Length: 449
Image (cartoon, rainbow, N blue to C red; front, side):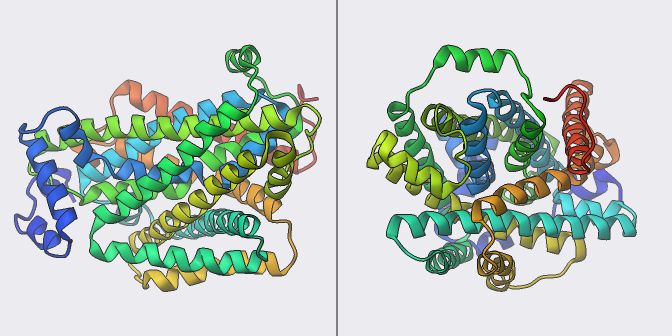
């Protein structure tokens, strides 16, 4: 279908129909965005109603998988892998911006476009890989929140998982009241995580000169660092987030022409930079905290539970408690977002819809199986992040391909510089994945100690 015939003539009743299903808060938000598009709002009054999709997606970048990989990176290598976190966040900004633009410009999400425009066998492969990635995501998110609750409240891990499940279900029901209530709740949880790590930085000793040197002189100290680096990439640039962002922007506000789409893309880019900058700073703070607390004398700390029990005598009970509060907020919020993304992936690829509560129940099963088998929870978290990194090239490649095509994006297709940066980012992730596969196969890596 031609791009122009599909998006330049929106159904004038579409927005009214969508609004009928939303609550007053969501209707007011759409009205405020409409005023912004018409030029009747300025400054913060302009930006606040537009904020939401990138804030929701940012949760994927500070989920419990990040806690696990960042603790390992900081404890074992100090600040040496901090540049990986920074690089991953910059790549994430670029690709989340492209995902948001795709939804705004086409009115479709990434999974839908894959189904419409790619060969059927490839679509089925991408769907299966994306579902596996969604389950790996949910494993990390659900287990992380459960671990935090179990440690904070001195409960068995199974009990923590049950409480996490109930809270997640309760938050998912907010979607029935429109998009805005859930956006605000997720935003509040992101704020909790940010405040927790801001406090941690005041408690943890930071060697600022060493930190600056590590950022200025990127390196991978040894072959084991490759696995952690790929895990950091997988925990930061998330496959389900690339699918989800396009879905959150595709119908939040119906643009009436290309000029309004261009303004929405501009506003979206601002939100992406701000929201993911906050997420990136939180990620870097995790590494800095782990480095300052564990690198000297406790470099073997690799588990969330061990980190919690070690933090208390090193930095005090307050630091350990704040760590758990941030972990719980991360696990609960990211579980909600992961469920929404999984539902969108299934609907987009195979047009199959199941109730969110059933989707939540199905994706929780692997987590309970892992715990029942006695698998180390933190090791499962880190392994899930490697799986995510290996699944990432599929949506990355599709996103670059679609956003560079005029017949898909019209006047909003990528400019040459953006396209080159996107290709370079995808190539970098593929290179790291290839190095990891070589290492897993037991082959020697020249240049790694």
